[in-house]
Image 1 (tube, rainbow, N blue to C red):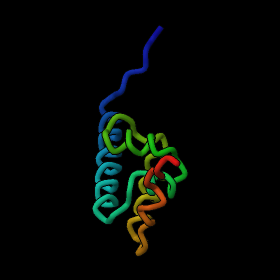
Image 2: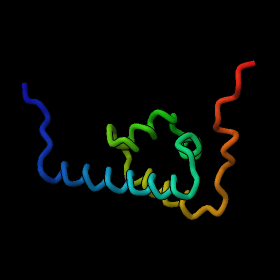
Image 3: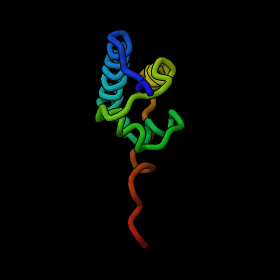
Image 4: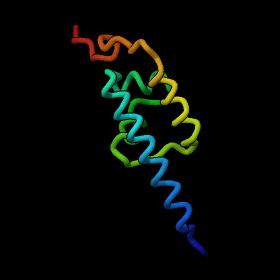
Length: 90
């Protein structure tokens, strides 16, 4: 039984995609976007965006995700932070 092995092209493509994803996430965070707001705008769970940010995972459809995040960068309005904060118990 053969295991799948990344060849040089796959590793390079993976690294380029991860660098792009992490760079754009950093720019969005600098603009005031929270990870939860980014996840909401992309339609993915917040935990997924946290893993992309940490470099633990990469999006399976990276070019589409990168394009969507670039469109978020062009938005002039950043979602309100209050919506994404945990509400106090009560």
